[in-house]
Length: 83
Image 1 (tube, rainbow, N blue to C red):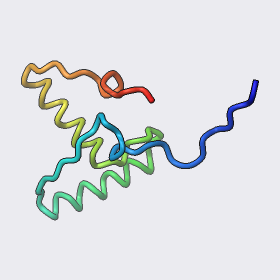
Image 2: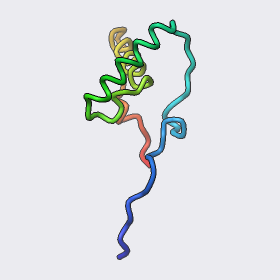
Image 3: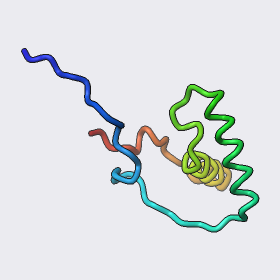
Image 4: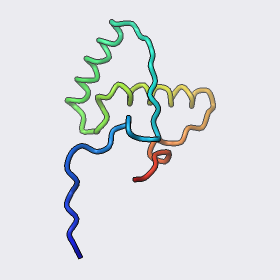
């Protein structure tokens, strides 16, 4: 049986996943700057893969908001399609 070589390069990104949709929004420049600084600090201190991503922060906040409004939200792992 042939040995499988590990794939090289980065894993597939969200922009190429059918499970994600791009979204644009407007926020104040000061807020954006402060969030970017805090995300960079968090990414340096964390071992989690998405800890410094703006999109992960926004998605987590939106999921929390939905839960607070009584909407059952499946976890991201359960909704992602397997490749």
